[in-house]
Image 1 (cartoon, helix red, strand yellow):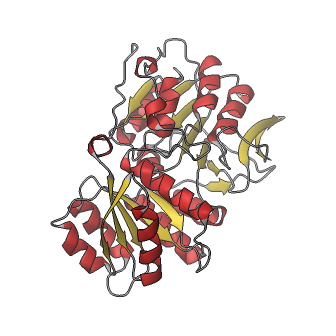
Image 2 (tube, rainbow, N blue to C red):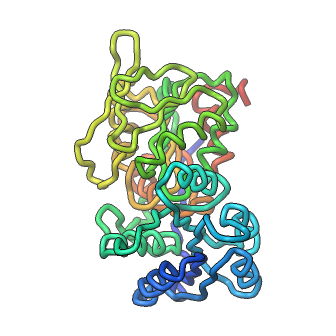
Length: 369
C-alpha cells in the first residue's frame, strides 16, 4: 500500500453557523442551567429542549440539530430505549449522554456508547454546576459539533491540523507485530466494539486498550468488552500479567505501560502527567509498547477529542511499528486520529470495519479473514 493523502475538512455546520443543540432531560433545573450555559456561548445555538424522550422524538422529526444532550433516566420512555430512534430520526446528530456516576449509571451509559452515543458527561448534583463543569461540557459540545474549544488545555482546535502533513506512510518496512494497542476517546467505543467483534479467536496477540472514561466506569467497561470480544479481559493494575489472546484495559487512575518480566509481559501503572493532560493517556501506552517490543507492535487510534496518542504513535512508527487510524467520516470527533495523521505516523486510515481487516493483514493473518 503506497502513501495516501487524507483530506481534513471542517464541519459544514460549524463553517456555516453555530452548533445547534437540543437538551432532553426531565429535570427543570438541569434544563435551565444547561440552557443558560449554551445560550451564553456564541458558538452554540439552543434549538429546543424536551422534558421526555417521546417529546424529543416528535420535535426531531421537524427540527434539525447537531448535538443532543440526553438524560438516560426519565419517566416513560427512558433515554436508552429512545436512543436508536433518536439516532435514526436525527441522522448525523451526535448524542452526548448526561449520566450519573453510579454503577447502574455506568452500565446504562456504556451501553448507550456502544449503541452509537458519542460521549458522556456526569450529571452533577445541585450546586456543582461550576465553572470547571461548564468548560468541560461546552468543550464536548464544541467538539461534537465540529468546533473544539480554544480554551481547554489538551484539546487544541481541529483547524490547527496542517492539510499538507496529512499523508499516510508506507508500510514496506513495518515490523511484524507482537501486540495490538488501541486508544480512543469521544465516539470510540462503538468502533472499538466493531473491531473486537471482527477479530477471530485465532487472532491471539495480546490486546491493550486505553479508553478515556471516568474511573468509576472502568470495571463495567471491562466486563462489557469481555462480552463483546468473547475473550478474557483484565484491568491492567500494576503487576497484572498480560497474556496472549487476552485484553488488558487501562485503569481509570493511571496510564497503562508494559514491561517484560522474564518470559512474561506485565502491566505497569504510571501517574506521571502526560502532555495531553489525559488520565489515562494513550501516549504513554504507545511509547511503552514501542520500547518494550522494539517496534514489533500495531496501534489503532480511534475517534476522540484532542491529540492524545499522536506522540506515542509517532514514536511507535519511528521504531518500525504500524499505526492505523479511524477515518474522519466515521469519527464522531477526528481530533486524535487527525493529530496522528498530522504527525506522519499513520499507515492507513479507515472506518472501524475496514480497520479490523487491516489489523489482520498487517499482522500477517490473511488466513484469518
